[in-house]
Each structure stands twice: as structure tokens, then as C-alpha cells.
Image (cartoon, rainbow, N blue to C red):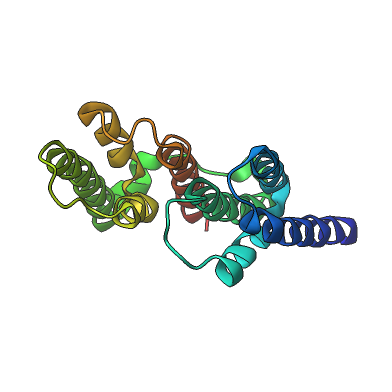
Length: 190
């Protein structure tokens, strides 16, 4: 167990330290290579270091680096819930989603509502984009997806053909769906 914590500490320190030159580089090939390295480190459980570096060094909401930010936050939640799930007896995990929602209809209403709101927000933003009107902020669309509306957002992307070329949506929404399923599985087994 100690080796795991040493690994986690080192990989997160590495991601934290590498984010500093990433933020200071202008968009060139070196920044692209560093971005790829940061994604790989994030996949290897270094997302906490990325989040800390983002919170300290990059508090603006510009689109620059938004894919990495979305990836870091979704990956961190996924890592956290995977860690919590692996501490349980894997043979005794329940995946009876129907029964879980039958026992908690208020949760089903929330999940359906937030996904409908997310879907409609993507549609509304596309409507505004077609008319060159003031658009919804990316933070709102991503936020709705993050708090449970990722499926609605992904369906909205496909139906309205909106934001389909943006990496922070193409990669972020599927990660958020995985994150939400893991959270649900964990709460089903508490």
C-alpha cells in the first residue's frame, strides 16, 4: 500500500511541475508534445496534480487548454470513485439500476431533468449560433453535463450537430458519462 501512495505522490508532483511550462508556452509543437504527456500522466493517476496546478496557475476561463482542464477534473473524479470502488468486495457489487431508481424516484427525476435541461441547452445554443446571437457559455454547457447531464449533452451534440468538433466536448462528455456511472455504482453499493 505504501508503494501505491509513493507512486501517486510522485505522478501528481510530476503533473503539477509539468503544467507550469505547459502554461507558459505558446501554441507550438513543444506545447503539443507537453499536452500529450500531461494527458498520459493524467491517465496514470496524475490528475490531482493537474487540478492543483490549474487552480493555482490558470484560473481564467479561456478556451485555451479547456480540453485538458475538462479531462483533469473528470479524470480525478473517475480515479477517486474507482479507488473507493476497489476498496469494496468486487464480488458483492450490485448493478441493479432499476431497483436502485425504484427505491429513489427523486433521484430518477433529477437525472432525467438534468439530462433534458442539458439537451435543451445544447439545442438553444445551436439556435443562437445560427442567428449570430449571444451564446451560452461553455462553462454552463460543461457544468450541466458535469452535474449529471452528460448523456443529454452528448445526445444534444449529435442531434443538433453542435460542438461536435470541440475536443473538450468530444472527449469530456464521454468521460463525464463514465464518471457519473461510477458514482452511481458506488452509491448503489454504499
